[in-house]
Image 1 (cartoon, rainbow, N blue to C red):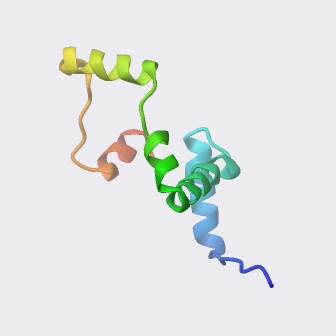
Image 2 (cartoon, rainbow, N blue to C red):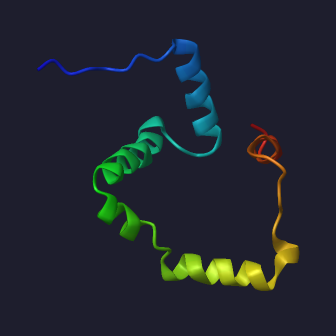
Length: 86
């Protein structure tokens, strides 16, 4: 069976690559989580267990709950990316 490939416009791909670079990522690093998400969708039991926060994440969440003044909130993802200069 022939493998199907998705085509992406060159301009769209270049823009995404530029944004990822500004955020400190390489393109292949960004596609890995997408592939993992797709794989987890095929295995719902594994997907549920994979979304449990680890101890470090829980500690940070607790800290921010106790110190809400240190959390910057944004109205939208667009506003967040704008604050990053993206």
